[in-house]
Length: 490
Image 1 (cartoon, helix red, strand yellow):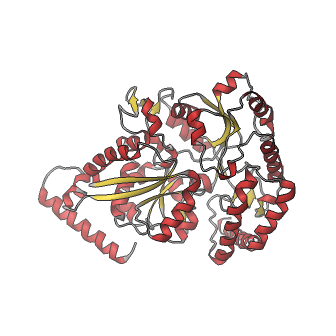
Image 2: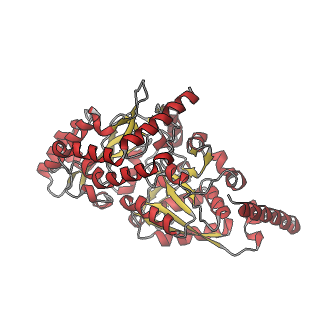
Image 3: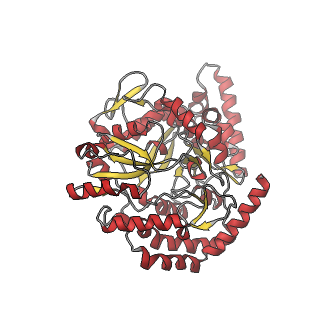
């Protein structure tokens, strides 16, 4: 935080303390820090990821009534669709678009790289001053695991800690054709099920995916969705080009076979979201990251039954620890107020559930003190819960057990650490090469990963394009840093 902002914060704090003494009333801390300042109400602009929802403005009107009372601030939410998010936010940051709160993650508008580029405000002073409550609430592993070069630049969502991939199924179609998922684990094991749907359901997409899809292989990426990775069971900690590994070559061969068989949409490599499929139910299978009792959440959200089966082990990676973060824009006009809002969002069940589920009586109804169920209007406000803050404040779905959040804690405790957990690559010495590598990725990656282009005639060409862009130099620098990190951390 700049010196001028530090001075402003100090003066503001002294003024609030002085007015609190003068008022000699028993008002809440929130009232003394916001309404008591005499300042005008602040409008916070929040950019987040997800398919834009019809009722988002309607819900934010109610959210703003609540936050105005609590912290003298209103909230405008701007949603950007999944496939467009990273590019849109890069443009917004570069152009100086007014923003206060920004969703970021390891895989969506890269948290580490953008923190180092100066897109986000360092929170080391704001967090203890305006975020005392959330510090006590969030699993410490999230706050420590999201530090970049020793500093916090965002508030992670308190949610599942490990990353575990699952195959999700539209249960209506599973039941209709009496399909058995007990033997499903690998990508190849899906083929008999996909074949059945393709032959019998011409209006259904057998294998739903968008342009962000990447086949699962047992490696941890140095930078998400770039071809540098370390094998999960590594003994030498060697960074390899994922496209040259036997596991990825096998997976991409299978993907191309599935694409040619018509199991995958011809538009998969350019599709930004599969929201239309989940809304209509015209899909059979996809892959997702899970959490305890996720099937209940998906079923409640979509309005029809969804079941899943594991596609990977539960691994704690940088991607999972940094999988959902809300940062404060370095250009925010109101950083203190933005932190107050994040503190409230992550500790206040009323606000957190309103942001997540909408307006009570319109989008959902309470079943009892802890459980809720969606109403028909929820289709106009179907939000990605993981991206919106502390999940453990959420009301339970009507079919969730009372001990759901205890199950989360158990799941978190049982996750296995990635061998490179907490290693964050600093690309500043190879920034030009990394930019060129990312340009190659934008051109070829989605088509390759979704099986859209033939592996035999294209893989070697893509690998060569990456190398020409400087991938080998980037990997060498990453390897040097990883070796130093290993030596330092033993």
